[in-house]
Length: 111
Image (cartoon, rainbow, N blue to C red; front, side, top):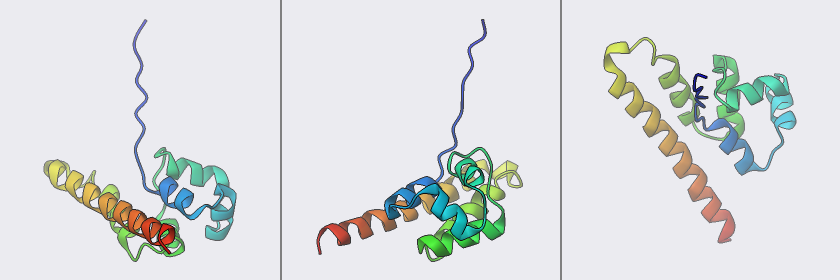
């Protein structure tokens, strides 16, 4: 029997939603998509279209960092020869979003 591996792409969408304390259905309705589509984006099964990525960036208050993440993942196929540069861009965008969440969590806890 052949071993099978499931590769899960890590995305910031789920972490942002959970940090805000919102349910998938609420975010999906706010953005104008179905809950299943949001779940697919959060689990990395599909990339959101630009309209959805822009709406999520605005909804989560990421000030363009989520758009930078989205762009870096969209153009990763185009930049085949520059794989390390693309991975670096994704890591930087994800790190900035994580720092944003961690800082705001710190502020909320220490009011």
